[in-house]
Image (cartoon, rainbow, N blue to C red):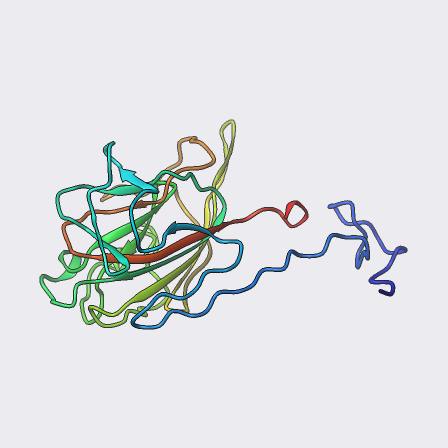
Length: 245
């Protein structure tokens, strides 16, 4: 193989030169196949599977003990009253993929229709809600950073149809009284809802969010809001700095 770059260019903060031929190459990852309405897609070759449709062995009740949701036909479904569930694995900076479906039989309105939530690190909620022809307060609609920022658009599919979240998450950093806020990019059904949006702090209801130092990793928590919301094909890829990959 010939010379890949240059050895006489300025040095970057990373310690490598601009166009440095010795800089490590990106890892090769085989991408997954897209999901279909009747079946989830394949995962990338380096993904960590959190739920593959068979059991909840990697999950537990957020209250402690075994997860109380049911698993059938390749998906998990909320069992109202059993409480939130969360992963045993702890996640920090990551790419997260998750598919969900609100009940096909429409009941209720506003926040009372197909409601659940995705809590990154157990603290920061991306709203799950059936907002197909169902208006609600803007910072509580599908894809909202709950209580903080509405999504740029409403990209919801019809009730009962499978929908896909792809989320890029950068955890907050704490150093004394200084905080570097969490950042999140969210796509719903391939449509951008947020891009590198800085969060105000962990999710609150009817209150302003603010930061209190916490560990750099935490579980992925899914909410029992009393509706029969389904989830499938949940995986993540830990993200590292370019030269740590």
